[in-house]
Amino acid sequence: MKKLVAEFIGTAWLVLGGCGSAVLAAAFPELGIGFAGVALAFGLTVVTMAYAIGHISGCHLNPAVSVGLWMGGRFDKKELLPYIIAQILGGIAGATILYLIASGKPDFELGGFAANGYGAHSPGGFGLVAALITEIVMTFFFLIVILGATHPKAPQKFAGVAIGLALTLIHLISIPVTNTSVNPARSTSQALFVGDWALGQLWLFWVAPIVGALLAGLVYKYLSPVIKQSPAEK
Image (cartoon, rainbow, N blue to C red; front, side, top):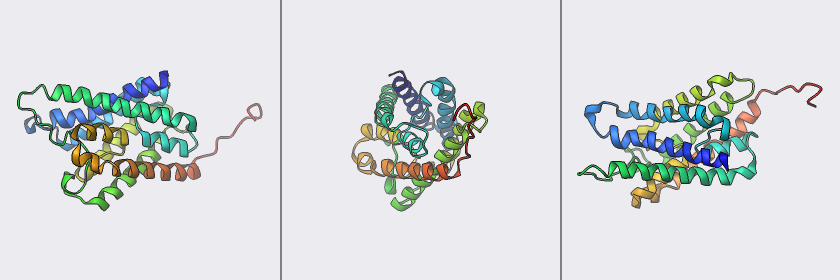
């Protein structure tokens, strides 16, 4: 239960910090954070939570990450569903807090509410195929970084930094295409508030990240360095 509570809190922070920067700060040009600021905010949520709850739950904050770690042989299958439920509920909690804050402005309009989309709802007008490729490829590389940075042979103290920077880079690349998901929980939380087109397009932001994560798990399982056991461990 402690692991699930940690995932709930961490995913709430990711949505509040990342989507919050888009809804509350990037909406005001005079503040000057733009796409780059939003990308950095998402990366910072992961870095901060990696060190806050990484030792409790592993700091997945993302159903695709949990699936990718399972496929890579680094996560127990029986924990998958509880983790995913906790992440979705955490994302919804973060989006609810964000809505309560944002709606406190007298002239508040929900708009896109940092939801993910393609076609007419892509920030850059990118179509379905471009969005599908982007989300699969970005999630694939995100999981490759996560699996590599958290491998026992990697420098453990810097895993959180590497993963946070990877998420920042992913956002810098893909915000114009899909508003960047690579995280079904993050997409679901915003789509529930926007409804309409966001719920209609939500399928892509579940299917593509999960496919990308599964592919990364398979590839990294092949690439992963073998950990030699001592005679006493065998």
